[in-house]
Picture 1 (tube, rainbow, N blue to C red):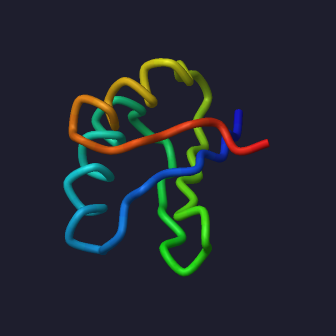
Picture 2: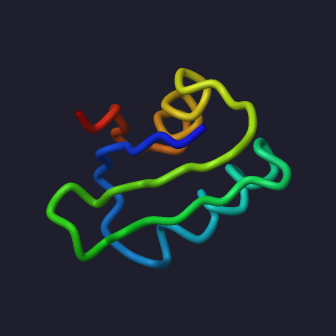
Length: 69
């Protein structure tokens, strides 16, 4: 399963704790931010995860997140 999200994460310093939290949520998954992209893209790959839970996790940590169409 692969999902791509639009976020408002601006820096590596902001992304690092989010990546750690997401990797804890998706063991064996792959998570990265493309902060060079205008949509500050978050890409998540894993066997099973909830899109809603990822969005909630970012919101809970003060960031906007939505599925990128």
